Amino acid sequence: MESLDSPSPGRPSASSDILMLLRGLGGAIVGAVLGLVAFTLLIKYVGVYAMAIPGALVGVVCSYCITRRILVLGIVCAAIAATTMIIAEWWNFPFRKNDGLGFFLQNLGQLSGLFWISLFLGSGLAFWFGQGNERTGSRGGS
Image (tube, rainbow, N blue to C red; front, side, top):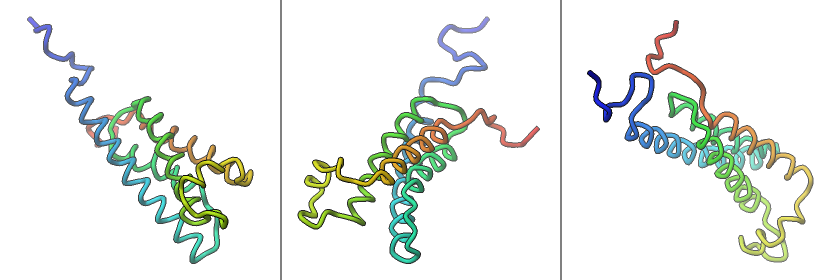
């Protein structure tokens, strides 16, 4: 007879859910840092404006750290990605009048359409990849 307190075979326990969320969140933060560095290096040394890269890396690294699909992580990744991309834009292209972050945030509407398209693309990629997928825990292939 199965106990009511034990998790069912198909459903992970609450502690493994929390651990999975924390692993995904840690991966998203690592992806944000890697994305910020990659964007800055591409601008500085290659001259390529690849604003969607920080967002995509947030989602990809988060997805790599989890083993199943979690919608909440996709939403969190999109928010982290948007924040990272705004900070990356400010870090590399501050306003001349005032280079402070507060002034930059107050004047986000002044930014180009390319920035906004890239922001939505990068956030969308972070959401899509950040949810993870339906990989099995065995990773052995079938």
